[in-house]
Length: 210
Image (cartoon, rainbow, N blue to C red):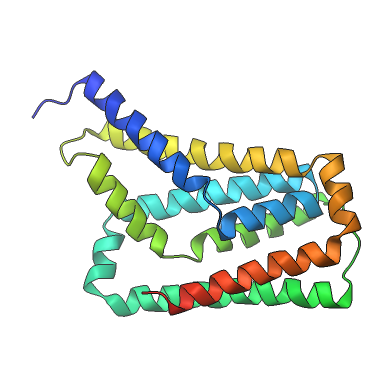
């Protein structure tokens, strides 16, 4: 079946709109980027945004290769990844709660050597939820026809990366502004407790979900 350029553009436009709405929804990734940007620096926030885009790309490519089908055939694998991801989110959340309880350190200034650690930590947050593979499986099946040519699928992956990075970069730029950082510095313990509490709740919710 022929797949015209206009059909491809229409499919990609729908995919871009749906995915952007999903990317902008609150969740662990949003919390991780927010706290990194507001508590460290703008550069650190952009590194976190790049990590989220990378993690989304990993899940999307894995879905193209049938990971969501593997999850359906081997539920134990999905459950193992889900519980592992939940444990990691709870670990991060409890760590923030402990830091808030103890008072924590003042707002930091990121150093170049910390960039890799920030990237890996935020990448782990993005990869902590195997439900992403299930979501991408459903959105690809719904919005990308089976007969779609390779260029459409490649463009969908590029759009996904741009949406993820663009949204989280915007979050990082807004929350790393001097005024936002001053507010965070004045209420660090309360905000760290809020961030930690949300991450812990999200981790518990992930662990209890199916």
